Length: 354
Image (tube, rainbow, N blue to C red; front, side, top):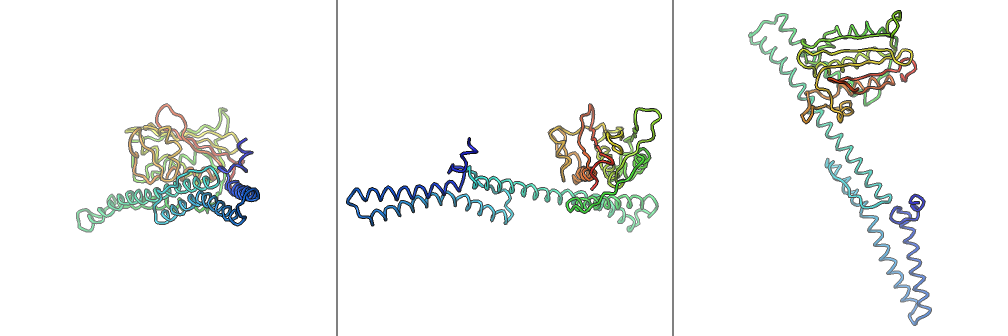
């Protein structure tokens, strides 16, 4: 009923309010003219009264229509100066009220983007400071003669340089993500050999400056329940899938307890060439209210009632979700009795690979 009455409801439609203004003005003028015929008042006086009444009503309605527009204009000018916390009061139910609500949503989105930009600068600055300081200390010791430029010293400098390179690569991935310029090149992969090579690579397993030789890695690949089944084969882009596995394993290692175990589990998907991949750790896990946020850009989970658990840029899981989305798959935090379990599902040959 309300939807049917909206076109004629002056409180829910600007067009209806203007229409009722015209009707009211014509009604007042008609009534005054009829009164003039029945009284001794001159028609000129009646016309003046009718004009004044119409102007007063028009001014009242115009003021009500112009006030929210003026408020939105003032808020837009404040936002242009960088005041993203400015909001517009919503006091109407018509199109102007919808405009105010849309403006407030836009302002909230811009404020969130601005906060994310600030967080990115702060996080990247913090992350870059550590390897740069370590590299500078090594080089200063070599220049000052405190230590010799032997193999061990140069290996330490190389690790810091590689960490810087990986951080820059993350930022480049973020740029490609936003611009949508990455093509997908899927092919058939022998999953057990592929994942085994990744986990044996120390740069993938213990990279990004979070060396944890105390954490043990396990690989569990089962093609099917049949004993004579061939090895598990998946259809995916090896480069993008490597980024997914690297980020998930790195994240699991960072949050594993002393002497913990990180398990990478692979199973066949429902379709030909599909893959179900899980990465499990024995850490504190991710709270339920943060299981979606951690896959957003710059999103970093925290422990129960605590601050962010690591000083990362918050891009690793976002890049992993981006790579999975390119395959037409899904990624999310699955229920686990202990620690965190992140499940990746790739559709295989019949998925979207555009």
